[in-house]
Image (tube, rainbow, N blue to C red; front, top):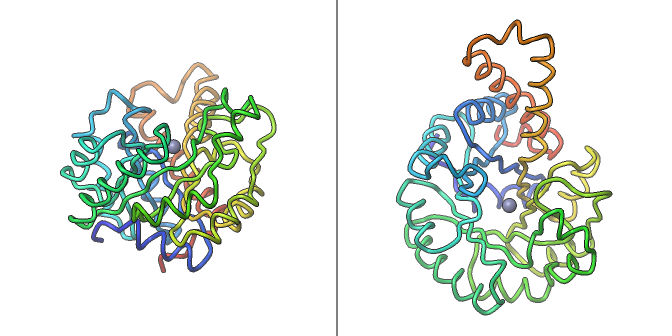
Amino acid sequence: MPLASLKEVLGQALRRGYGVPSLLAGNLEMVIGQVMAAEEKASPLILAYNRGVTPKIPMELGIPLIVNAATRAGVPVVTILDHGQNLEEVVKAIHLGTSSVMFDGSNLSFEENVRQTREIVRVAHSVGVSVEAELGSVGSPEAASVESNAERSFTDPDAAAEFVERTGVDALAVSFGNVHGLYRGEPCLDLERVRRIHALVDVPLVMHGASGLDEGAYAGIVGSGISKVCYYTAMGMGACRDLRELMADGGQNVTVYHHIISWALDYFYAETKRLLDLLGCSGMAR
Ligand SMILES: [Zn+2]
């Protein structure tokens, strides 16, 4: 299939009320397992390249890998540069063939975030590439443990409406108690805030930091207006936990490295299928 567009895939998710997972696709077995799962479940999917998480995998290899896998898939698959830091990085990712980019200006002032995001939207849209931006700051577990700090970084609904209007972004990542990595203690998500933003903003909303929640939480998150769910840490940690179990008998069945590759592919396939069901995404590419 041709590379899918973030704007179109999330537009449909928003209209029909389901979430699409954005999965970190750091290596070949992750990518193959994830795409096979989406095909099996007849689901759209987003594959993400994140230089911060896999700094030893150069963008020149990481982006063409996911673009190639996406165009070979039998279901709509979007590729995205996750947490792009500046225009140069975004242009490089576009040149390598991605269909969408995320620009993370969340650590900038509101006006500077608007200015830089606008410029990136202008460049990306001129070649048909969709743009996700972030307003408010999705923290780390450390930041979230200090409640007052976390609340200061939550996305303000009125500011979100102004930001989308002035920048022309195709999707907006919002902060409402969500954190990257694992949650410390009980997650406290302000879904009422998401509903208020959703009512004021006409582009799909994005949740970063969706790992480690109860299975029942995802329906409520999607129901409050989130269309794209970025998910990695729980999957990455689950893979390590299961691998430790597999090796517990002294690794009788894992004697050469390609046994691990094959096992990992099966793991990412199974976990992605589970997540597609949780987000209500299964069957939506039929
Ligand atoms: Zn993120």
